[in-house]
Amino acid sequence: MSIGHFRLWSSLVLSLVLWSNTITSDAAIGSGYLRKIREVNKLGPYLGIVVPNMFEMDPLLHSDRFVPDSRTTSLDIMGKRFRIGKVGNQKVILVMTGLSMLNAGITTELLLTLFSLEGVLHYGIAGNANPNLQIGDVTIPEYWAHSGLWNWQRFGSGPNNPLALESNGDFTREIGYLRFANYSITPSSDNFLNNVWYQPEEIFTVDGSPEVREHIFKVPVDSRYLEVAKMVEVIILYNFMKQILGCFKYHQDWDFYQNTSLSKKKKIQTC
Image 1 (cartoon, one colour):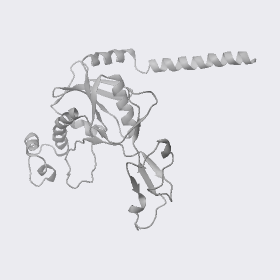
Image 2 (cartoon, one colour; image 1 turned 120 degrees about the vertical axis):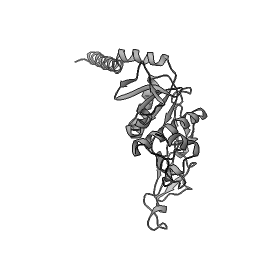
Image 3 (cartoon, rainbow, N blue to C red; image 1 turned 60 degrees about the vertical axis):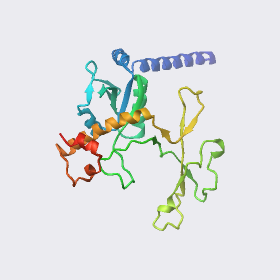
């Protein structure tokens, strides 16, 4: 086969592959679903509510405050069920992500891509290191951060030594680090795991220049959504306790209830 024929066949194969990928991409969401999505978006924008699992979503779904949309209650797309409705007067779209950062990222991206949203609210069960917080307390952060992005520093190097690629702007020592030796049985000894330095996320903003990165660690929460979160807080707490304990009333021995503010007690003490 001549070089000319080889180039021709290579071009044809490449074209067929690209054409095949285009067909697959266009067919990922059927035309019927695209029409329904457009109909839903005409009534937007919505507040997206992202929840890790059904155990955490059920209290909101079974609340009287959540009212499914009368026209389109839900859309099942790519293994995700997007529930359309209202919480109070706020139009919402609920979706369960499944566990892990990967599932959360994919589901949220799908939510943002398909639907007309004004913001995203995430809630779920969390542990804490604050002894003043009790089971049943709900916290609403002013900032959130992904603390799982690290630069692992080579054994023998310390806080005064630059990190690999730090000079290029890829990594930083500005946020802080965790020294594994501090948690050894004998804290005075070294640990071969040495140090991990917390790193900010690399983000590429929609209104920025393509492939020009920005760095951020603490992400501020829009104050408008703090009020929405407070409204959802009472709904979730009430229905979660009903789900776990059945119909319940005030009892002084319940620490989680005793530490609830009076205004919330009035809302949740009656089934």
